[in-house]
Image (cartoon, rainbow, N blue to C red; front, side, top):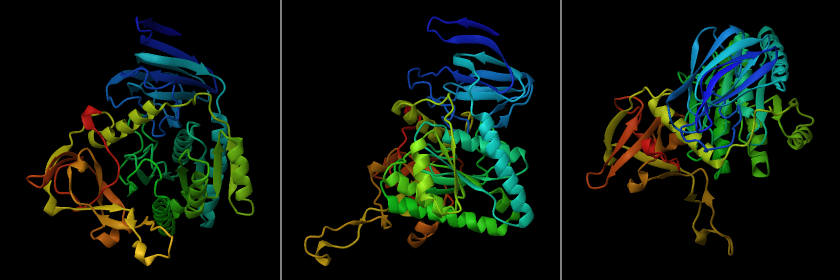
Length: 454
């Protein structure tokens, strides 16, 4: 039952009540402040349940579970508790046994769907849960799961659902994000991992208390060798974590991947599967990729499964993707709900060291055979001279203290350059917290953010 008034612009406001029978899904899109940014984006739009069509942090709607049981991407809704939904938010409320949900605010789309793959996801979780329990008893490795598929099929949503189900069953899997363009855990342009010890918060997303983040510095893989190196480093950390902790070993990991599945993209996918020792690959939405992986992984211990794409998953426009990335940058510095106050500080060029990884020459032409062109060294760590080109850049604060440590070190966090003063030889930056930076060694990439002007 909907009790709603329709405004002149066609958007629904006031309060709507939806009664869902068992195994039904309510798909909701909150009206965006920047309407027209994209077509109805997938319920997957962001696995950490933070998908906005713009960078706003305005709370434009609330959702309340009135009766029954329900969940959002596997995270249970508490009865009677209001959940804030910001402008542009897309989500799906699923119930196994029936429920009544009330939504108040400006809703652009809200409808109940009966065709949903949630039961198949639950069945997959049941299999993984049994393997985790067996691994705990026998002191063996738990399941390492990778979700693959083209863009806009729901990979990150499936990862979130499986993570939440694992937590509800008493496990704490590691969520691994290999998607440079999305940034499910932290800012885009990174490869990251975080243990999921509690259900992913519907409002705030994946917790950032203990993330492991490696800085790649770009939204696309333009340096495949360096990307492979980063994934291998992450794989080594996973192995060490499993060796040191029995529960972590049994819980395994759940890996979200890029939507690039052809040519070099497929090569990177197979490399990541090997580097992370993945033993279960879930292919979502494409039969062709499923067949390819079955052939290429034949004879290995890796099992390949196929899932249908949810009916709530549709194509996202480039404008929507760009706005989602801007929102992730803003969330890092200002918090998921925009209530953080980042610190603005200055640093002199003489007090910091800037480096960029990749792009340096391997050898001069005179040292190469006749007719052969010099190539670049994808793993070269090159110093960067401060200039006005740093303006609006997002830089990583590396744990590496020396140039030689940068290739093997993760990052402590990020800063955003708001002003470059070449006369005074200093720059002004925004940091999530005040005080000195953990390191004076900063990594420069191609990540730009226009801040509040975005």
